[in-house]
Image (cartoon, rainbow, N blue to C red):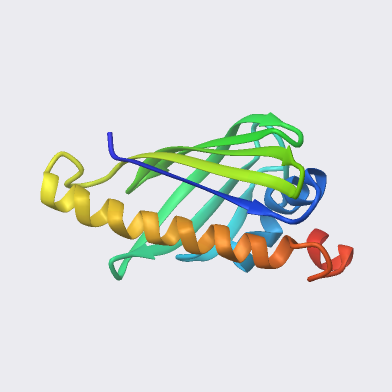
Length: 153
């Protein structure tokens, strides 16, 4: 199964970074490649919360439902998706002397994922989108860069 992993350090408290990531309303402010996150159901956070996510990979529109299956405050969020692309994605958060280390691991199944040339090209793009998302997250959460209102909006 094609896998993408990356991590970044952010100069902000783990509680602040986790809260920002855990709130689906912030997703479009930092997650590269997505155009929409629409909540499904009543749960807005934690295990069972779900969103319909729409974005693009290689210019192709992709839509999927993301469901939270693990939620450990200030430590971990894991989601699974179904639709055109299926995945299991885990975001981890750990305090460091300088702030917070955020890690990401995503495992994907998509049309052509068993064809090495296609899988390699898609994974390249997913890696680039992941890196950009982490950089966006750092810019949004870095100490002194935004007010608490923005981090919770």
